[in-house]
Image 1 (cartoon, helix red, strand yellow):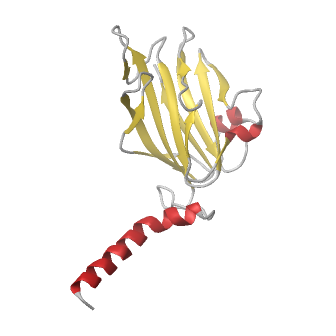
Image 2 (tube, rainbow, N blue to C red):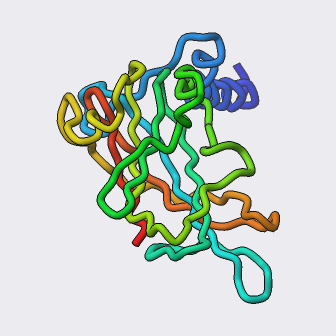
Image 3 (cartoon, rainbow, N blue to C red):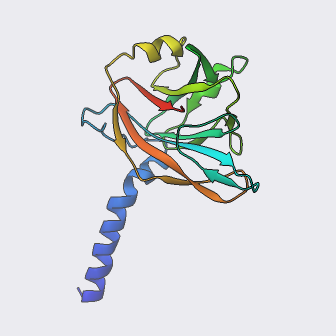
Length: 197
């Protein structure tokens, strides 16, 4: 075997080691990543993009505290099929923001390894004068009849949160902004709060 063949074989081996989980997921066999604490639980990757229009009319990503008129978008990806819910808390009252009340329950379903933008691609939630204080991401392996109750007392314990590299996402004016990203893991249900104010 020549040196050229050895280099090719080792490169191919490295490529397969990196790409194999993704190839399995594309064939319909989701590659399960171990939870952050190593127990094989549900793992989710989430990034919150908050943006604000400047006095000059361009958009920029911003960090909390957010104010009226700011817009918020969530990008989420689960390592296995899951159901995604977003709750909003304003003046002490919590409500389900996503999926909308009149939507089919299947709208909450997320396929393994697919990246979703919520509320939808190129759409955002606009903060109004009602002072949205907190947004909560709830991700579960099964559809939830009452995501509000589950968020208050998630089965399987608390969510492990690990910072991830910030994600560049498109702003309203087409430029890019940085979204705060985290990797989340829990035994049964992932719950993460985004404090807006």
